[in-house]
Length: 183
Image (cartoon, rainbow, N blue to C red; front, side, top):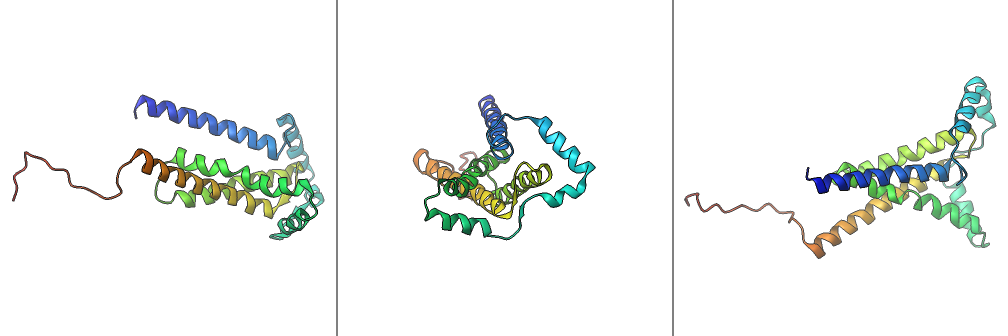
C-alpha cells in the first residue's frame, strides 16, 4: 500500500470513529454529554431487576410510527419531520463509510444493508435495555434505508468520478508485448 493510500485510510478510519461517536451522542444521549456511567448503571439495574424490561416502551408494529409521523406532517409538527428525516439522514454516512473502509467490492450493497441493520439494532437494543430511548422497529427500517441511500450516493459519486477523471475500464484488455512473436 502506498503511503498516500495508507494516510487516506487513517483519515477515513478517524472520520468513521468520530461519526460513530456523534451517532451515539445523538441516538443514546440526545446530544447531551456522553456519560458511560449512566449506561453502566442502567445496564446493572436491568441485570439485577430484569422485570424492568416490561416497563420499557417498545414499538414492534412496522410502519406504526412512520404513518403517525407522516400524518402529523400535514399538521406542521416540526418534530415529526426531524424524526422521519433524522433517522434516515443519520445513517447515510454509514452507507458511504462501509464501501470505503471495506473496499468497494461485489456485494458492498449487501454489506451496507446488513451492517446498517445490525448497527441500528444495536442502538435500539441499547435503548431498550438502558431505558434511554424507545425500541422502535420503524427506526430500524429508516436507519437501514439511510444506509442504503448513502451507498447509492457513494456509487453515483464513484461513477461520476470515473466519467470525469477517467478510470480503469471494466473490460479486460490484452496487453501487447513487442517481444512476443505473432502466430
